[in-house]
Image 1 (tube, helix red, strand yellow):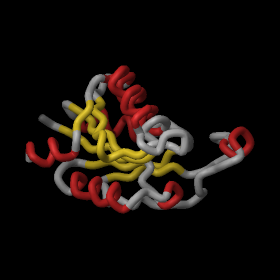
Image 2: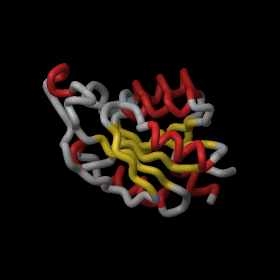
Image 3: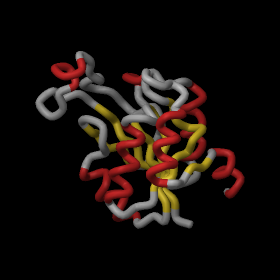
Length: 157
């Protein structure tokens, strides 16, 4: 099965726990990987004016991935989606920051693009609304069905 790892916003702005960065890095070394990096541009996404908060205007991915794409807002950029489609994977494994917002938004974008997203449940953390990520995982299961664990993926080789 051709799989690609999509890493959502694992960057300094969101202060990811070390276990998350380490777990994702282990998988990223075993398969093609793509990371998104959320940076702020108020003219593109009204974080500050609408939410009173914004990601950094400059940041970097904490996971070494084959490709890193900048995004402004919740969903992966069109360039990211085109790159993933060109890889023609059987499944896109999604992990990262904010299971109930940015990770879930990536799932919708992948699904709508005709790709098959699967959430790596133990390699995501939720937003401040639900740090456990349980809400996002339940929504993911409802909308896309595919939930996996990093242990399953590592065992499969």
